[in-house]
Length: 143
Image (cartoon, rainbow, N blue to C red; front, side, top):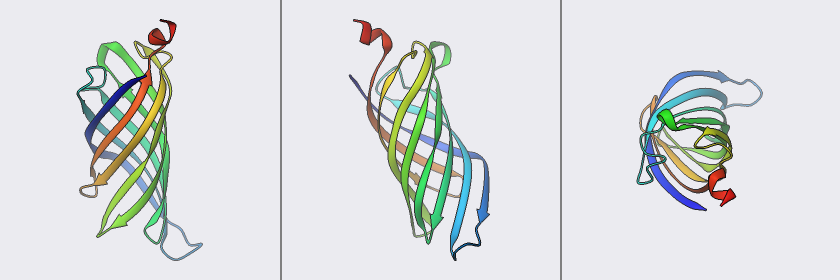
């Protein structure tokens, strides 16, 4: 397995929030976030990430799950899923969880692996994320 680590600054490009009436302080949100990744691993550095997350919060705590897509310019794409715990602190939000590759194309065809991430909301539309994980490319598996 190959180790990878990095970060990205993301911006919410679309979102919608519902205030639920089943319980006080219950809210659901769906959002699209876009950003550029930074990593010492050249296979991940400067890739463009988009993810779509659904957040379910009750009294400032809850879960987020969704899907992500990484575009690696002319080298291909990878995509997968994530799950996280969400907490609100002082008006901000912290999202910590795991991600798992579901597939890829080009150089990333057959990718497997995953890892952990932590995102911190810096404003209502901006976040910073750090991530750390492992991956195997199909070419590596065949060797």
